[in-house]
Image (tube, rainbow, N blue to C red; front, side, top):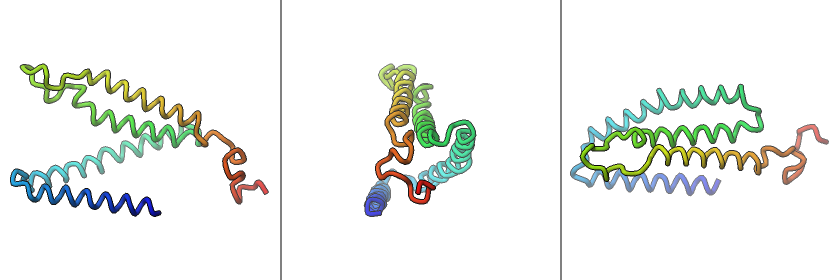
Length: 148
């Protein structure tokens, strides 16, 4: 509970700092910022969340219950990284006359990050407590689980 209060307070302070900085910047167009935020909200609520819920429903049907949390976390992480990296992978914004703009091999880098997500998920599944029986977890049996 205490950590949550600290995180919420830090988030509010950071957002306040960002709003104050934007309000003091003469180059910021409030109408443009508000339209961008409205667009982000619409894409989030009409595209991203339905897709996450649909994939979650598929995972719930296909993946064993004890493996679901790791698979869902890895899937959401991989999707978020892919959405952010895709414009760079496809080369949007890369001027033809400037080879130093966006010079990295973004496709390979995305593949490496996705492999890292899969590796961390596999490690978490292999090492995590989700694969243990309740009696093998620290603390022993779950109260009220019929083990008495």
